[in-house]
Structure formats: structure tokens, C-alpha cells
Length: 320
Image 1 (tube, rainbow, N blue to C red):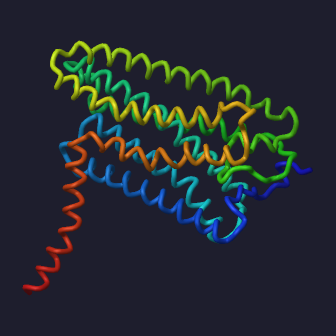
Image 2 (image 1 turned 120 degrees about the vertical axis):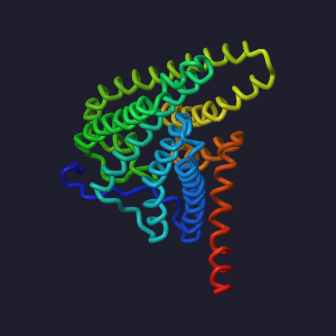
Image 3 (image 1 turned 30 degrees about the vertical axis):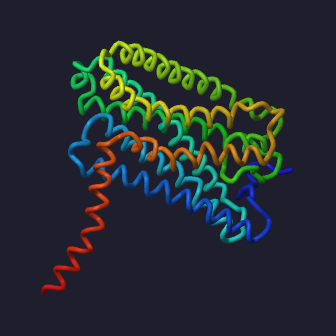
């Protein structure tokens, strides 16, 4: 038996016991991490460099890519390092920082997806007022509100979680510091301190979800009233990537935290954690660029510019 005052480090879940499987986990996570870095990095750079993409929709997409990069960078590098060096340890402060950053970035992303639903609603249902309702100042304020809400929510969650005394060791049954797994280490009835935070969380999550659903109900009603098939296709192309990202985000998170206890197991918890924490940041850039010709053109222009620059330098050096 121990308490939180005597815990200086936590032990994260190891993916495998054999060295070969540990290295396989390292390379697998490295591939996912590099895919997320490349995809989100290209989107951020393309939007920042291409003036044609300086619109509210792409401004929010840039913020989403930043959040995705931060989210996957919070969990994956530490897990990769542990597998590479055959260790499970993470310091108490490191665990607290990981919880804070992960909850901060995930909750800010959810708030931002809600803001992006409002952006799509105004663009399709009130196009004549789009410039007024979503001016540059309004967009900055809404993005800042999403980041700010995530910060405050994470601060509340983290301080509540790490103020609870721990009596069941320091082994966390997950590859990163996850709040439900840390609460399993709490002393009996001490986790009740978290109940108030959970109640607030439920109201906030349901409020955002209802707002997104109502926005898309209005959007689909407006789209179905568009007379031309080309207009309907363009409107759906604007909304489907965002709807797909929202569905992926909510389905994985909801299943991770609300799955029945009867089907819960350490292996399933591990797989679900990978699905909701690592897959969306790597897949979101692909979803947003798949049906977006403007973004594809900007990324292609950026990549061809990068690849052609060494050729220009080589040619200049050759003729000197």
C-alpha cells in the first residue's frame, strides 16, 4: 500500500515482453507519428503560405492540425522511447504534464470541431452574412475560446485527479497516463471528488454534441433545397470532411470511455486507446484533403516548390 505523496514515478503498460515485439511497436508508432507529422505539417504550411486559403474554414483547419500534432506528440514519443529503451517508467511530474496536455488538446479539439460546425452552417445557410458573422476578428475570438475552454477544462481535471490519494500502487494499465487508469489506483471512495468534474464534463460534451447535430440538421435541410445537382454536390463536399472527422473523433472517444464493463479487457482498452489517441491525428489530414481540390493544389504547389529548389540550386552552382 502506498499513497500519492510517496509516488515519484508511474509504470506505464508495456506493449510486449520480448525485444522483437517492443521494436515492432516502436517502428509501428514511428510510422503513425511520421504520417501525422507529415500530413498535418503540410496542411499547416500550405494554409499559412497560400493567400487563397486565408479564409475562416482553412483558419480553423490550421488550428485543428496544430491540435492534432500536439495531441499525438503528447503520448507517442514517450511510448516509443520506453519501447526502445526497454523501460516503463514515467515521472510523477511527467505523468501529470501528459494528462494535462492530452486533456487540454483533446477538449480544445472538440470545442474547435463545434466551432467548425457553426462555420459550415453559416457558409451554407446564411452565405450573404458569412463575411459579417465570420470576420477575421470573430474567427480569432472563436478559436481562442476553443483553446481557452480546453485549457480551463484540463486544468480542472488534472488538479482534481492528482489531488486524489493513491493507494493501489503506481502501475498504469495504459501506454500513456490516462485519467480513468489513474483513478483505478485511488483509495476507496476518494474518486468521488472527480464526480463533480464528470457531471460538468457530461453537460459540456452533450451541449457541443447537440449544437453540432442541430447545425447539420439545418445544413442538410438547406442543401436539399438547392435546385442544381452541382450546387448540392459542392455543398456536401464542404461538409462531409468535417462530418467524417467529427464522427471519427466522437465514435472512438465515446467507445473508449463508455464501453460496457462486460467487454472491457486490458487488450481492448489498449487497442481503443490507440484508435482514439493516435489514429485521428494521422487520418484527419487525409480526410480533409481527399475531396478538397483547393487544398490539394496548395499542398502540391508547396511540395513541388520544395523538390524543385535543390534542382535550381544545383543548376546555379553548375553554371558558376
